[in-house]
Length: 196
Image (cartoon, rainbow, N blue to C red; front, side, top):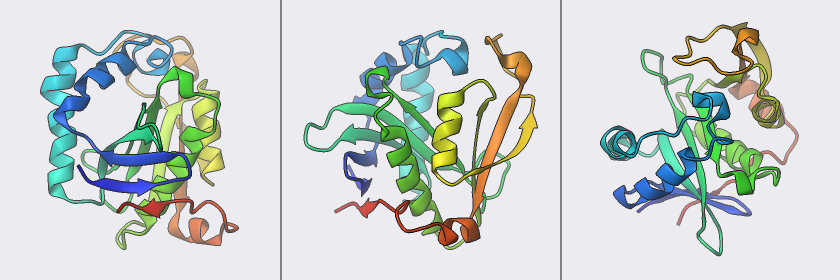
């Protein structure tokens, strides 16, 4: 499996079919899924038949976009995943950043560390001019990660959630950063080290 990048504490690597069990366990935690499915786990069949094949297809398409396992350097423990990919129907010049970590790794700055590294990777792709991310307005922890990546709040909107989630009446938010804004940031956000 190919390593995309490393940070001080994380390795972001390609998914394999063997990661299905770790994804099932991640999505079985109602705290992790609170702002996604109101705590309902993702069925194993959906992960093995839909998610894993989609992630592997990204890897086959090239190294620029996709979903990557986040594991701790040294121990190799599964911490969660990050993604950077164009949303369906949108241009590759403006990919979406996303992340999901196991609850035990919350509050340690790992989401920010991985997200910053992936934003740096994204802007290493010449065609990328902007990177965005979105979440529910009440998801303050995820919003803080976006802000720590240098992203600005660009809009409020209402997503079509398939289930009611506490706080969805307050809508959703999108954050974004342009290549020019990223390059103008003080040294420090570009924490990624390329994979071997």
